Length: 274
Length: 44
Length: 92
Image (cartoon, rainbow over all chains, first blue to last red; front, top):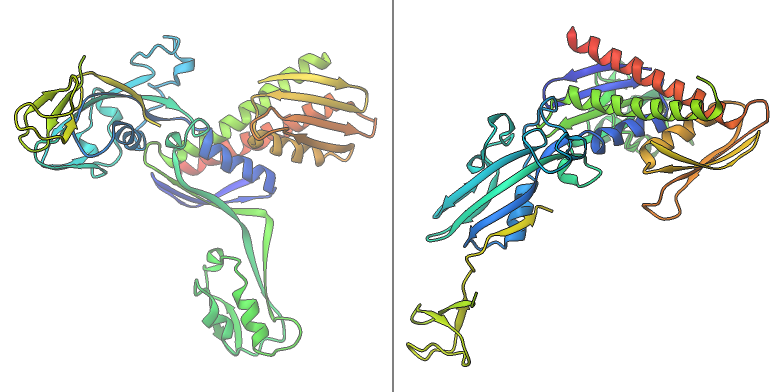
């Protein structure tokens, strides 16, 4: 099994996972989404709210704001030495105090620890008009997406089978597949259809080209054939900037490894093998 | 803590005892004001 | 991880996994089925959020616990390989 990166920056990754199986790829995807911890606001103490929004809705909106997370300093409340009571190792505190008329943005959320500031400054929370006021205190904790979607570190995270496109002898270069392809990955050269260089990975596996080929009256079989290779997966992982994507990938793998390790230890003890 | 209201017409603060009626202008439409208490919520 | 053995014979095991979900169980059963001595490897969840119960049967040449142990070793190996991979790719 191997990971070959096509793209990797702070917030986006695209890679091919080779010699794998669907079950492993799916466990990997699920682990990235719901087993990697991040910070999110969980407790809100509202001192004043004369805005048009109910307290509960305001709190819910605050919960969904992605926060920069340093997992070397913050740990989940259950694993903290304070026993979940809430200390500086498991809880980040924020204050928000705004008077109208103006829009309240995520940058108005003032963190006590600047490393846990919201990832984006421009997330609108609520619009206040004259004489409206919001004063509150919020506490963020570390948890996983399994508990609530606001703790998911990923926005888009998925995979597809690696597309394999083959052309048979029967291709007459009519170009109907080229017109039909939504990603524009096909072209006609020297009277035969072929894949544009370096664009094969962009195929959606939608098989519209196969239908178009059949519509061309070429016979009982289309000359273009699309197949997905189940042993090779193309992953796309997009983070919400709370954690670098590389860390999301590594932590998901470490989670799966830990699970296997735990089960291995237990089963070894049970069967008397050490 | 008694609930405080605000008269819709004269904007006076009103405390309701028996009648739902503003003692200053006689209007029967009152708005409930937000209490001074602190509210703790779960952000979910 | 917390498991509870419900049934264990030389070629059949029924194990309850406390607090596990589809993420790990599906990966584990798929890996178990890769082993040619395994007959059935399947987990059931009575309700959506109940604890999964794994059923493993073998042809008798290996006992179910050994088979599970081997599957875990493989899975751990994959993760190690990929972690190594990611780290070298990033350092480049």
